[in-house]
Image (cartoon, rainbow, N blue to C red; front, side, top):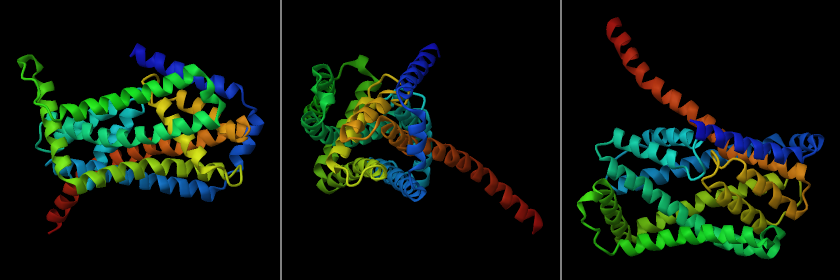
Length: 326
């Protein structure tokens, strides 16, 4: 509890330091400058993003032999999103919640449910790392923020570690898991994971669909940021905007603050000034983008979770009333 409190206070302090550097009048002017029609389009795009993400989860679960309806998977993802809001940037809490709920709503074991979450993360992060490598190379030539050797080292180290993990998984998938008895549940998890990886390797069509879904979901994020930036600058460079988006998410994924708060906002605001935007406008764009892609998702998740829990209770009551009337 104390650790979570410290994390929230640290994230809040970083955000406070960021906003103390901003002219509040300029920030207010920037916020009211954004067309409400654009906000509506961005909210709709985020809903599409969440539905695509949910479809990806459902396809992976079904491929692994775990049958879940789209609505039930959406409920599981909603609970995971709520948990992600209060855990650090790597979203471990959200993935554990999803695994527990998948096991609860199906006949599979927790080890099998954990494999589904691992596979989804594998597809998502593979696409994310590949995009980030291109973004880091591009920004290192276009923005002064990556001229700092420490910042560049941090970015490339994070990407290098992720790539190493993926390579190890691919290497392990062609080897027999160790049979030491003390491994227990860990061994069962890796055995199931490697079996599913082999199945995907043998089903090229599903493998391509999953990777395409992961790419599409990630590429929708720079489109949202581009639409926002267009409210302040005519014809902004799309590739630069995309690079900003992915580098900010890379920093936000570091397990430092709840939901990546602080690091994400500071990185995006700083990088947006590189295309000539004043800090106030950059902060306004970041605030709205963060609301749409993070807080709006949490609100939707809370609403859907509440509705999902209420409806099953209302249906038996309705049926009982109709029975009494007859």
